[in-house]
Amino acid sequence: MSISPIKTSSTRQSSLVQFIKQTPSKPRPSTLKRDIISSMSSDEQPSHSRTSKDLKHEEEEQADERPQKKPRHSSPYPPPDHPSYHLPPSPTYNHPFPISPVPQSLKDNLKFNTLPIAINSPHQLDLLYFKRFIDPCVTRELTRYLLEELPWYRVKYTVRGVNINTPRYTTVFGKDSTDKPWNGYKVKPRAIPEILLLLMREVEHVTNSTFNFALVNYYSSGTDSISYHSDSESFLGPEPTIASLSLGAPRDFHLRHVKYKELGIGVEKMVLHDGDMVVMRGKTQEMWQHAIPKRAKAEGRINITFRKGVVPYATVNYNTYNVGSGGIYRWDGREMKEMRSG
Ligand SMILES: O=C(O)CCC(=O)C(=O)O
Image 1: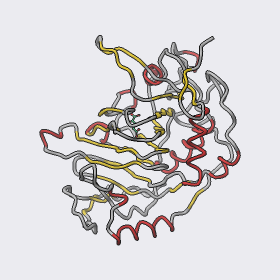
Image 2 (image 1 turned 120 degrees about the horizontal axis):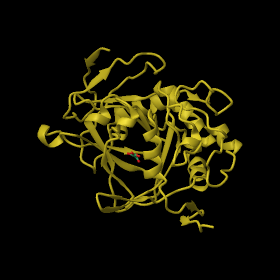
Image 3 (image 1 turned 60 degrees about the vertical axis):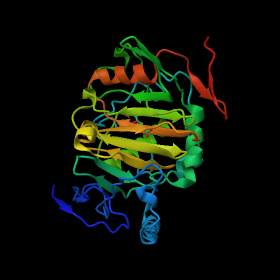
Image 4 (image 1 turned 180 degrees about the horizontal axis):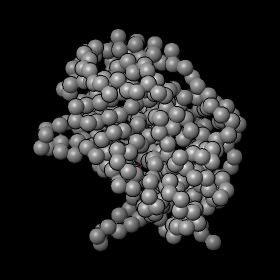
């Protein structure tokens, strides 16, 4: 892989040197035209909506040129020889209640922007950013479907005697890539629902990766958040690729280097909008932490991450911290309501 410096055409000079990576062509699109890193204060515009007229114009042109793609094959279910996701005994395996079939209108309108912008820094931040990866014509219906159909949890757990209330709704589907059978776990791994498989198939294609977990967060307001962490869990293997989709209201996404104080590296700030996808690759998880900080005001936002767990503990960990042992919440059209048990 060769790395060559590029000059920025932006009106604002980033404090970081900017690089464009010549990524392997297969099957990543070869049109990684620009490489943008934002080093800005939180009240500035994100790099993808800079006010520079030229840049905006260029982005609009690029958006117009983007091929809008339909999903590639008719079945959402991965083939039996999928390298990461071993098919569950049934498509609804261990779902706590039936998930309605995906409406045909939703399937028909699912289209994707497959052209990313590479975001890299000399400090081993390695991201791909797909602006409006999911076509805006379908994100509303998709968001509502996920809110209404998925089982949600507000997980409580204890770490070294401290009680933690997870400050967001969570849920998870999938199983690690080992041959351990689906019914061989104390926790109950749950089949990935059809809608998430449809998304996963497209994400796998554009990232040249395979996945076996879909973790879903719902931030119901600005007080819901996720604090700085990295997903460098050993159960994902070295240099994991994690694809992260956003639906609904915009939220700030912050990244900081693990040695940001010692090295004097500023926080990198982006705003993630409805339909956007960020793919974290390479050493990003090892060298950087990310967060969705609390905000005084924010509407609801869903986040879906696709990941690949490589040992059984991935299944145990993800279910423990995203499903837990408490009650199930369902969306009633206005808000989350805890289901009555029994
Ligand atoms: O909501 C997001 O964009 C980030 C989610 C995240 O960091 C996580 O689930 O580990």
